[in-house]
Image (cartoon, rainbow, N blue to C red; front, side, top):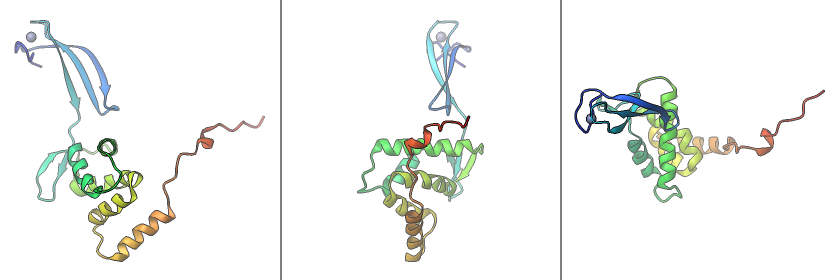
Length: 164
Ligand SMILES: [Zn+2]
């Protein structure tokens, strides 16, 4: 890697660490010529095929802007959206697949958005699951009522004494 200061054609890695919950690796480098240090970030490429057929890099900002519309008027903050976009990226990256349809990204957003805000979830689901009638909404709402998000129960993480 070229030194960004003196354009020397080589640099030495002096430290590597994972960042962003393991999604990227940051390397601290030093130029053997001028001695200056700089940082590079390495991530696996992840691409999205849009409905138009255009392939573009996965973007958390695009996830956020898509979800932001569904969250209008809802108590969802920009920080919530940023966390959601990171969760979506983690879930698609953990699949080990490097290329997705835009629609698959939309579907990957749904479970995370549901935890965040059920109204925004319904709005978003109506687009991504192509709701065609009120019956589709009824079904989705019934599903939300029947399977409310299970809240972590502090009692369940206390180990039960084993039988002697
Ligand atoms: Zn240099």
